[in-house]
Length: 97
Image (tube, rainbow, N blue to C red):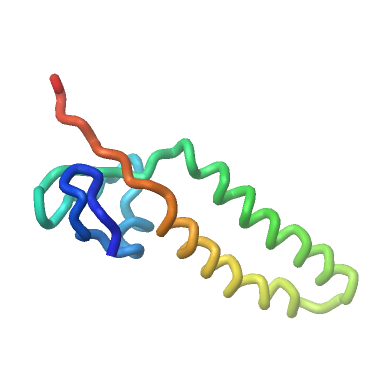
């Protein structure tokens, strides 16, 4: 479970955090406040995914086999889950606060 930036209580799962980005904020079950994953962190995820896929495409091309790319998929899934547990949620402030 991940903590809410408003009440600091554990109320979100990693999968909820993956689904709710800056365009679709997530609502805390404990305090009913909204939070989101900031776009400013997304470039890092894209860089890490490219760091896995680009070498695997090169190795697949060199070996004339799709297996390096197939083996990269679980690494990318793990990387996204690891990344999303560490990227902070930001509090969505109410209008006029």
